[in-house]
Amino acid sequence: MHRQRIGVMTDPLRRLLRRGAFARAANLLSKLHAADIVRLLELLSDRESDSVFSLLLEREPKRAGEVLAEMETAQALGYLEDRSPAEMARILSGLASDDAAGLVSALPAEVAEQVLRQLEAAGNEQVEDLLAYEEETAGRVMSTDVFALAEGVTVGEAINALRSSNAEDLEMAFYLYVVDDRGHLVGVCSLRDLLLRSPTTLLKDFMATRMVSVNVHTDQEEVARLVARYNYLAVPVVDDENKLVGIITVDDIIDIIRDEETEDILLMAGVGEDEEEVLSAPLRRNVMLRLPWLFAAWIGGILASQVIDSFQTTLQQSLILALYIPIILGMGGNVGTQAATIVVRGLATGRLAAGQAGLTVLRELRVSLTLGVIFGVLLGAVAALQNPDQPRIGIVGSLSLIASMALAATVGASTPIALRRFGVDPAIATGPFVTTSVDVLGIMVYFSIARALLF
Image (cartoon, rainbow, N blue to C red; front, top):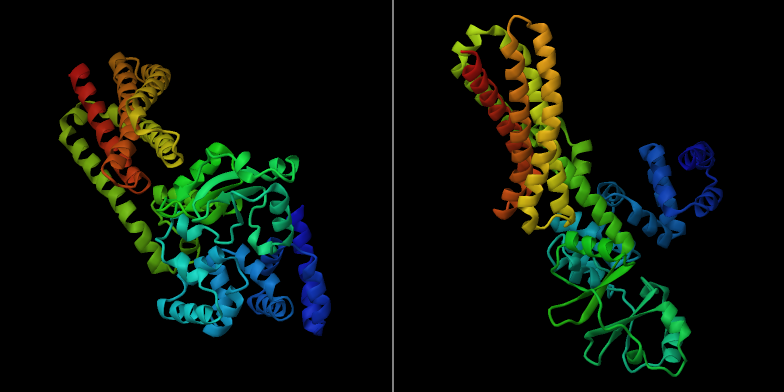
């Protein structure tokens, strides 16, 4: 319903732009949330959306920055790329330091350097400071606009400081961080605790000293896991000396979780890791992104065909065996993929610890054996009905399906764990390895059981 309401506004906005009624167009935009303006821009033509953004930039520069911050990186760069470094710097200076750093890092190196020089000349050095940290770390995604007070401050003084502070400094006012005289993070108190205390009470007398913080070098996925585990609205960021240098808020965490999950899904599908690139990349780039994964699957198919060829005599003696190859491979492949997906997701979210590897594989094996028995009995019954003069065909099909599904679950569950131990991202390599292994093992098991029971 909300999306439909945004869509209804496109025609009135187009008419205002055509008539040159820019003041009314700006008034219309002022009633929308920045995220809704982004959606509106997506519904307009390129020329119209450029006009709307330029209008915002001219009349409400801060609002334009908010809209830019709500966009995907590739979309935001589209509104920046034709502008001079000086103009880019002017636009980016209105953004939060972490949002600006994300956009600058995506610019071509030469342009980014010029923009940083412009920002530095304007007295904004925070963006360059953030870019000094490695990508996908807490230091890169934190906001340096963090409000903190000394531990010797009273409640009354703290409330007065909050009232007189700039809105930009209050990135997350629900938590008040407390530092010592050297800037070390020593405690935190909630806004509720602050308001319930006597004005003469010192912060150090009731602040919580046991708290969760992250280092500037902590991986952003780990930060997201901590926030999700403890249900925090924000987490403080400290340097190697435990000095408070920034804060990561829940809205940034949501973006991190979304980006990391998207990356894992795309990697497991073998189509790259960048959603924007996958959706908008030219033909050649898309082909090159998918070629390695599909080549691995092709190799698996070749190996499976070689295994079938090695059992050619068995197949010639009973051609009916060929009927059940698809179901053996299909069921094994599905079980292997399910097990791999569960484990990869568990590793990514931190809910599956390395010490639980054996239990995880065992659990997936038990599930697959149960399912294997159910579908194995069904396949045996179908095979027996189709081949009443060869009752052993049903037994072969039943046992093969049970064994194939058990092997597939074991491979699917253990592969991501093994890859993680060797320092390989499970999301990248699990898919091709599991697909190839399950196909080859399934064929080998099927024909080995057939040879043992039929001939």
